[in-house]
Image 1: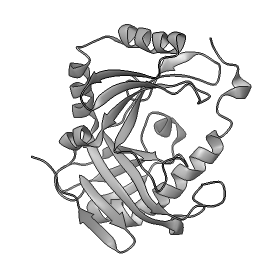
Image 2: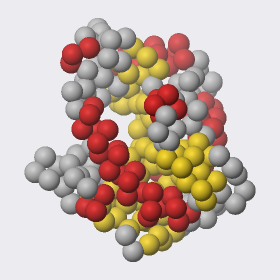
Image 3: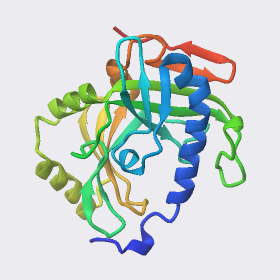
Length: 231
């Protein structure tokens, strides 16, 4: 069943505010330390297509980066060792649409995944300022390599097959379907958009991380420390 516009995620503005605060922290403490010529993207069309930053590295120009932070108040200071890749969701008009991970309109070349391990929060569990963030875990991965791997894991199912799985989970009120070790479908029925995601363990995400400190690191106000990357 679809959902009318008025009841699709009334907290979206608050979520956007959290994302802006996290990005404000990441610019001086992560992006400007590991990349060259970091440019935040203000164009709303590009933002809508999954581009938060344009960056250069020593080998690549104009990297299109989408920041994906585990910013729900449930997970701030208690992050899970996974990240959820959106497969299917409802939009503001109540129509089922393809989630950001499989979106044909996406321009994303790299995902920067962020887990918040230490931050000061207000009484509502939200971060009020970039200064209140003390320690985050950051992993920047090659989006296309990750997508190719997920396609292989899903046995090259087309989007109709994937949508059928998502619809079936909603109809049957199933919360979880295992795909393989470290990956499962998850239906979040408690959220307004009723999203179905692929929950992927960070050990799998790490396989597609950039080399060196930019790939996987701890980030604090005092500096960056590389996290061991499996070969």
